[in-house]
Length: 147
Figure 1: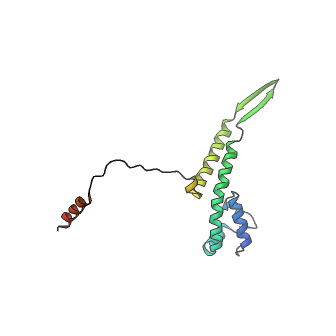
Figure 2: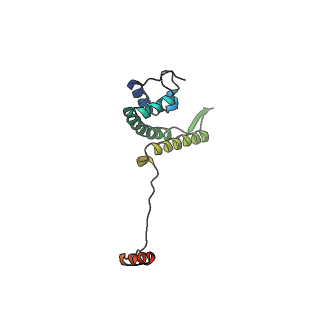
Figure 3: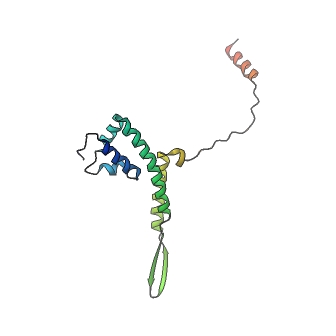
């Protein structure tokens, strides 16, 4: 646990930079020169500038995660071995499964950090006819009211 408890803008800047670069707050706070998570959360409640800066850093983190997804998807999933003059190319199913999990995890986090851009899009379609006139609605409402 860290001994850093006094708020300094330079520490807040460093935290936000690391967040934007894709580091987790948990990982950042494990460093000896950083405050504990509880201290960071306290600062977020007390320091408006830091709170705004932290929110922007989290949005930037979504962009970093999206960039990482491209890199993961482009990683090679094959192993090439040469033996006795023959080249053998094997497909690494474990690497594929691991990379799928890495991509899905980043997609999920990005969708929570920046839902308008990376979240699931829900489209609602309503069809049919509506043939109720205002007069009919008013008449029924008066009947219920007893007038």
